[in-house]
Length: 246
Image 1 (tube, rainbow, N blue to C red):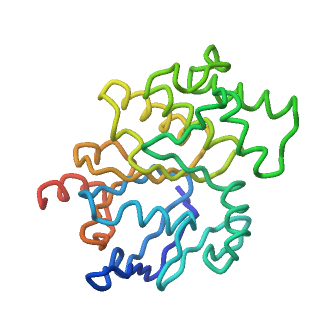
Image 2: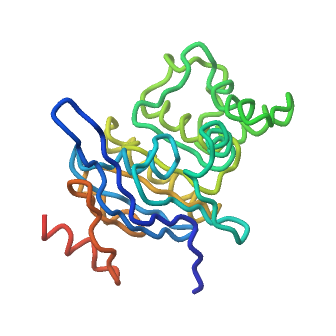
């Protein structure tokens, strides 16, 4: 089966200046992600997982290297855009899911899902509402559309956050420990939603987690340790060999 690369990282480095000196959070990271892939990046706390996602989505500036997004036959260099242009591009083309949900407490679930549409200058009173309701139905929360986030569970809030990330129909989702604060049953529901998005809608998802036990649940899994990404495996035996090494 032919595959196409949608994300490409070249010699990615990120260094933070601290009172104790420079700290290298990412070291010469090279990675190619195929369209329609559910990629897991597994690593301990402090390994650089969140930093890696922030390089991919352009939230943070890189120290050196390049991040390319391949779309419409062209390679877009994320960090060559201005900060404002990058923010607008991200809002329209990439969904971001956080562990802490980050729903606005004064807005209903429906309004939270509609917000990215407005921020991307795509708002239409009826179409935006219909789109938000469609996404809440996807995550099985349409009956709670008019509730405030405080009146639903943490697992339900995470599903709303996923719906919000899909508001502008991005091809790419990046998820930062989205199941980290959830119980195992609720975490399974989140995985089911992600798998549906990959298999039925062709989305590309990159998820980072500290839980090594989740490695086998991704279509591909890599380990990040001390800012370095392990060499990409050539076959599906990666999960077993990675777990044995660690």
